[in-house]
Structures are given as structure tokens and as C-alpha cells.
Amino acid sequence: MTQSPSATSTWWNALPLDKVVIAAGLNSQKQSLYSLEQRLDWLAQVFANEPKVETGYFQNLTAHYCQTIGAKYLLRGLRNASDFDYEKQSPS
Image (cartoon, rainbow, N blue to C red; front, side, top):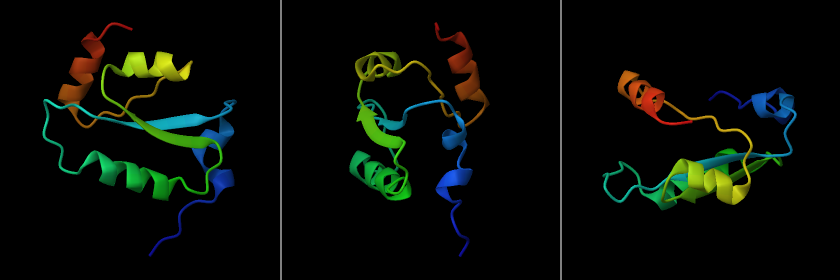
């Protein structure tokens, strides 16, 4: 089993940010492989020892969630080329 990187070597500690929020989206129109509760539990476990990282979830538009939490920057995960094409067309 490999060791996870120490807190000092994680990329978010190198950023000039007070905190990093990692959130799971909930879309009632899509069937997720894992429940929201399971995904949130995994996030909580992975980032339990990272004081700069908060976890959460949102149900509507990502932009609305960002406004709600006062986010200044947004990094989105992409799974494949079709995700990239979709995101490229989204208004900024």
C-alpha cells in the first residue's frame, strides 16, 4: 500500500488560498454509481487531515454553489472529451 503525500506536498498548500472546497454534485436526472452519502464519506476520509480543505455538495448549478460559498476560483474535473466539449460551450 502506498503512502499518501504529506500535507506539505499537496498542491493546494502551494496556492495562496485560505481554503479549498471540494464538492460533489447531485443531479436527480442522472443515475450515479455511488450514493451522495458514500461520495461525501470518501471525501471526508481523504481530506480529514487537511485543514485547508472543506468538503460539500450542491444540487443546482455549480456557479450558484460557488456564489453561495463566496468562491473566487473554480476548478472543474473532466472525465472525458465529451465533458470538455460541454464545458467549452458553457458560459463563463
